[in-house]
Image (spheres, rainbow, N blue to C red):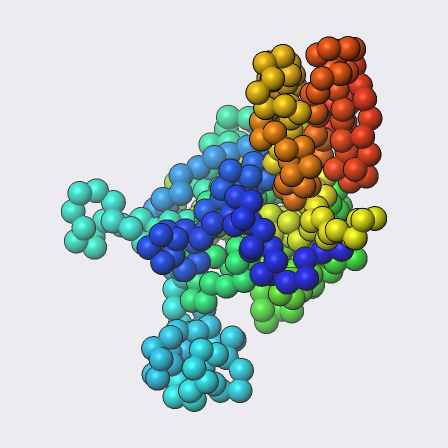
Length: 453
Ligand code: GAP
């Protein structure tokens, strides 16, 4: 089961502190959202899962964390200045601006007027002044993708690590696009995060690597709790490919508003490294390959110093963090009818993604022995390094369980009179089955660590 509508998710996200409209108290700034106390945990957990699978669990990927502000030349030579545009249409009646492909039947989607301008290209990159004088002569772009800094740091990473193809460089971080019509909550926004891998391979082996990465990425999303039934692959038609791509496969997800792109996996060929090389006379963005590599790179190998160095091809799995968060919230969302006829809302996150791992709840909020024991358990579980363990002293167990179901806390631990007066055992309540079991306090750490392993 998933959410019935985007509104259900938006409402839960605000009520429980996952996601808020940015600058809400001033009426909001369109296309920008802020992650609240639980949202930041969920997002960080998703990013950590990606980093683990891309960097720690492989032996052929290095990490990078580059600046957001980007030199104009980088985005000129990457092709973004010339081609990173959307055709847009203005409505002369209500003055709204729309993406041309969002207009149906020749009418303004806002006011239905047919008095529209012809489509005009609109560059999606944000610019900002660098230095104290804002006279237009010194500016930088806010990066529209994290990828370019991987290409511009390619030589630095190869020199520092002596990597040979095939190998990758992974990066997670903010990207900015001045979307004409941001919409569908955090699906299409102006400031978002990407998790991008640029995987450098020998020319000729790129198509095989592309296939492997598509499968790898689908499997990863399923491991995050996304149902395979709601995923589809879209082989992007040639005429719709980005300027750098030879082939792109989009991983599409059935979001509450429809089937849309969650991640794109592109074969960027040697477009970017080749372009930065061509435009910098003394720079060779090349990597060492096995001598028998089949080279059909656009930059002739014989121009380079040694024949075993080529400009590698790049396979790029590029996922949106915010779209991932939205898909995971949607998948986890359930409303269940209980035996007594009441309903409960549950977010059944995979344990590694849950914003709060364990809530420790004293049965009596003013009972010193119970409260102290609950705090002690919180501290000892927190030291396991699993993520957030919450000590929650609201004094109403039933309400606490409902609240933790709604935010997806897998385990609630209740400390009661029996704990402190009889046998040092506590109650563990499972989010999904609602079953309660008693367990000695001394067994908790091993049990909880095993549950999240
Ligand atoms: N480096 C390649 C690249 O940026 P893209 O398909 O434009 O490719 C990759 O973006 C991913 O970034 C998308 O699959 C999507 O998940 C996310 N994304 C792109 N634009 C977005 C936006 N305006 N709001 C939220 N996420 C976005």
